[in-house]
Length: 518
Image 1 (tube, rainbow, N blue to C red):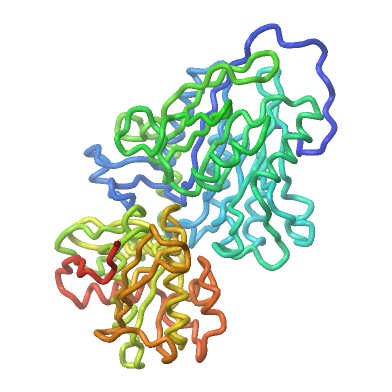
Image 2 (cartoon, rainbow, N blue to C red; image 1 turned 120 degrees about the vertical axis):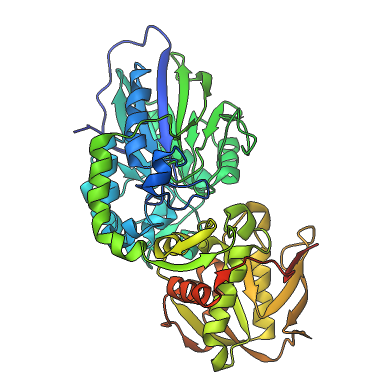
C-alpha cells in the first residue's frame, strides 16, 4: 500500500539538503475511457484475431507490461493519470468504476485527477471509486464542502514521497464540468489558474518544491495555467485527447511543450500510449531537464497473461450483448473527434438522420446531436452492437421538444462558439442545414440556416429531437431547458442508430453539405 499525505497535512522536515540533482520518470495516461481491451486504429473494439495479427493497440494487459518495463528503466518513477478513466465501453456501463479501480491498483498508480466523466453518474459512483483505490484522487478547482459524499474525501492536492524527495500533486478538472457531466448542485467549480496557484503556495510553505499538476482541462488551458502561475514544474494533461510527440506527424505539439519552465505532457487517449517523461530537478527544485516521448502500445508490447485473463473474465457477461451483429457498412464510418467536433462528419449524419427517422411520424423536423457524444469510428464490414456502443456509450435517450427558430439559432451559435477548442458542443444536424464562419465574433457566426428547404423563421415553433443530455443543458445548450412539450425518455440512442443502420442494408456513409464551413 502506498503512503500519501493529503494537501494541508503537516509534514516532517528532512534534515539536510539533496547533495545532487534529482531525477524522476513521470509515467502517465489520460482519457482511458474504459478501454480495458485492445482497440483498433479507429479507437473502437479490436477482435482477438486482429490482435493476434498485430493490428491492435492498448488494453490493460499491454499497459501492465509497459509500466513494468518503464519502471525498470528508471531509478525513480511515478505513475499518474490525467482523468476520464470512466465511460466509453460496456465495461463502464456494467461495472461503473470498479474495474478501473482494480486495474489502476494493479498497475500501482500514484495519483489521479478527476475528469468530467468521473461525474457522469454523480458523486456517488466517484466516491465508490475513491474508496476502492490505493492512491489520492484530486481536484483543486472546485468547492465540494457542501457535497457530503466528497467533502471529507476529495482533496485538492497531495504529497507523495519517492527516492527520498517529496512531490506535490495537484488535481484540476474542467471549469465547465457542471455542463459536461452530472456533479450535482453541491459542487461549485472555479478558475483553474487561481486554484492551482493556491495549492502551489500551500505546498511551497510546506517545503515541497517539486510540483506536478494532473490536469483534465485540455492543452490550451494547460498552457494558460502554466503561463499564469509560478512554481508548477510539470503539467500532465488530459481532456482534449491531445497527442504531444517529437516523432509523430499527428502530434499537436512537442513532448514536452515548454511554457516558461513548466513542462506540459499529454498522451492522446484510450491507453494507446504510455507517456514517459524524464525530469531532472536541481537542489532548488527547478527543472533543469525534461525529455521523453509517449510509447505506443502496439504489438511490440507483450500482453501480461494474468491481466489478459482477468479482463477476459470481466468481459464474459458483456459478450452476448456486444458480439451481436446488428448491421453492415460498405466502408468505414468516420466518427473521429477531429471531424465530428469541427465539421459535418459521416457518423454525425448517420446518428442525426437515425434520430429524425425514429420520430418523423411525430412531426419532428430537426435533429441535433452534439459532436462530443460521438466517441469512435466504425470500420467497414459487419457492425456489432459493441461497436455501436463504443460510438455512443453514454446511454443517452431520445428527447423531443418544441422551441422557436430564435432558440434554434441560439443553439447553433452555442454549438460553434468553441469551435477553435474542438469542444464537444459542435452540432451535427439532420432536417436542416447551416453555415458558420469562425472568423466572426462568437454569437454571430451562424448563417444560411434552412429547415428543410425553407429559411428558418425566428418566431416559428419547431419540433426538435436531440438526446436527453443536450436537452437538459449539457454542452452549453441551456436554451433547451425551458423547451415546450419536452419528453426525455425515448429509446436509447445507440439502439436507435443500430436499428436505423440495419434497415439500410449495406450502409454507405455520406456527406451531403448540410454543414458549411466558411
